Length: 578
Image (cartoon, rainbow, N blue to C red; front, side, top):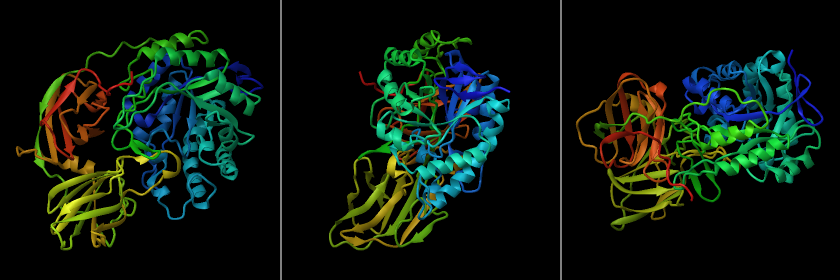
């Protein structure tokens, strides 16, 4: 039996000192047919371990409907890591942050009346207990002391930045051990004394999360973890992007230097991210520190392995550093070749929003949560009273997150949560329609689980508007049902086109000719596009394409400039900070 334990100064593999050199791959951000390839490439950089979060809301988006198959097959992902001769670290949360929608927590959970998020509140603990038991049914038999490859399991995630409920942490430990987890248990926090003190328990091994000033951070960590191995469980080698900002990058040489300092000190490390992947569909999260900033579709992260799985300059810099401390095995993949470039004419139809559906009729607008809606769009309709003047002032309590306003079917304006907009002058008319997009659920701090839609009272010239019809819009169902036509594409439109490939291939879809919306290739939901910066192209994984005929569907929310889909030779993720 192989053992993995914590010694006085080191991790011990079968009793011998062992330095963990790990990198993060999120199985839920990578097409499952690419899992093995990304693992092999990570190994070729010199890693001996792969780490992943577990995204609860990917496995159980609907309460009681657990899914661990296909793209959610955590067991297969761990087995592929083992097949590559690598160890695995599992971080099941339940909260994961990760710039992933709602921090990984299911909407049905966070919208439960009276629930206490991330603390020892009975409803939350009961749900988390059931979730962790399901995860550990997959993980426990794959632990290293049972012939598998899992060497560490993390309790919660950067909890010291959020709370200090020790009873909650003890309950997570109890559930974990009762489920048969016997490998060492860790916590992670930024190396700030108050976070390290609040976020762990004496029986858990503390690790840190940081991306620079390695020597200083390790010193702080050692003050709070006086024995055992030092470990940076999230070595931030890049950063994420949000709409309206730049494409964030870090200098490969500077990142490699900080990695060198870590490894030279004998510390173990997990590189976050070794390969970022993609926020397919509408899985992106958002941050809100006074301004609401939804995360873009790409999660390239400026990682050593880029979004399409190819090594970057940072890969080679890191590989050179790692080779000073550990054997580096595996063949380095070739640089990314130019992707097929082609132009596809699109035809379509205007106004693809349904006129009716499974709607709720209530005095106030129903939230996404009240509708039980997990999609990105809800349409709100209400009859307008007569105005004293030719125009009235429409005021919402809050718009979460982007709203398009129409009077009698004529667009009159757009309101953005990011810009703190919630009022609009509208003309007199009989009927008001408001289309609201959830642009991504906040993944950090106290806004976890907040309601989406039109929040609070809605007034016109100070008078309440009541009698609302709230209609969930199922974007994926609409995309699947669209049949192309030769009508115009003015305004909101559904577009479709066909193209041919000689063989399946990674593609990069240029979205510069469009406004804002969603794109699908052969029924696979690529994600969101938006004319604003930074992201200019969308990644199309080769496994969703095929030799011969392929189909693209675009659901445009605003206005296309040209009814054309252009596939280009390389990705363009936007302007960088120089």
